[in-house]
Amino acid sequence: MIALSPQRLSAIIGAIYDCTIDPDQWPETMKDICGCLDCMGSAMLIIDLRGSPPTFLYSWNTDRNWLERYFEYAGEVAALFKVSGVLNAPIDNPLVLSHTFDEQTLGKLRVQREWAAPQGVCDFIQTAALRTPERIGLFSAYRHDSVGRVTDREVEIMRLLAPHIRRAVTIGDLMDLKKLEVRALTVTLDNLSAGVVVVANDSRILHANAAAQLMFKADGPVRSFHGKLSATDLAGARELTEAIVLAQRNEAAIGAAGIGVALKNASGEAAIAHVLPLAYGELRTRLMPQATAAVFVTQAGRKLSADMSAIAKDFGLTPAEARLLEHLVQGATLVDVAHTLGVSDPTARSHLSHIFLKTGVTRQADLVALIDRLTPPIKRPTVS
Image (tube, rainbow, N blue to C red; front, side):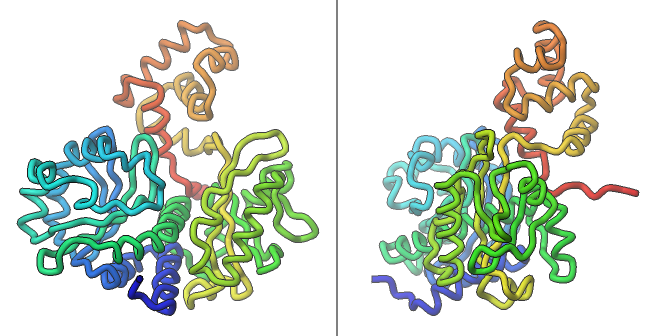
């Protein structure tokens, strides 16, 4: 049985969603989560599975010097995750170090001997806040020797919190982890490249940002029907509606509903929607008092030319190389790009070779992944 009252669980879930609006609240929220898990500290990090140093986003009760030392073990940690099977496990299934690896395996790890043991850390419990073939984002909490290893109780608590953490991190990433100010709400939302629709409890549209308005006009993945939010894809529309209803009734019970809802526009192009509950919590209700939820919609392969121009400038790409790169990151093959741009296949391959050299990658998949990480979800402000 989970020794956690419904009131406390609801309060922590609300705090997690408040972090989407104000990311500076993550350390305090991590403290609350660690209190439930009897953990000594917590960190949120991104691990590059190809061996690049991890990136720490937020932490609580963790010495900065120890965080920086963790970088020394990036390769070992990435290899550990590749062989553990965690990448193929259900995404909201918590990973416990002592449940995944035996004593002999743990004893051979430098990160265990040189990083964890000197701090008195005896165990980790983690959940994936982000997972791609190249990267895994982890919310990690760790236990002290004096408390002992993670038990089934803590696993069940983390399993309850996992989808809420994932939703908050995913939407926070879409907003580039920027704080939403009430007085500048509509301006901030209009600067997002993702479509954002704020709705009341009956899916009545309270606000749609500029990107969402364009989707409405172009038979995109979402639409306004008699002033209410709907979706072109019927299955997606039902899933969105159900998530919005749950957001109004009890955000603690929403679970994984409304995270990564698969949509399609009228032409069959893919899109993804994420639903952020807004009906509870002092911070979120201040944004728009009548709001039940905000729906964030991203369309596959849509990148801003302004972003690509900035990347081309950063890497010193020629105009021809930049045009080829823009088509590649939208999912076109090299042969298709050559045909579209009216150049020969050898010329296209030559441009790609130059791009590889300038960006420091050797494969097209790695190139697309690099540009995806570098292209910010927030549109750069125009200068008049």
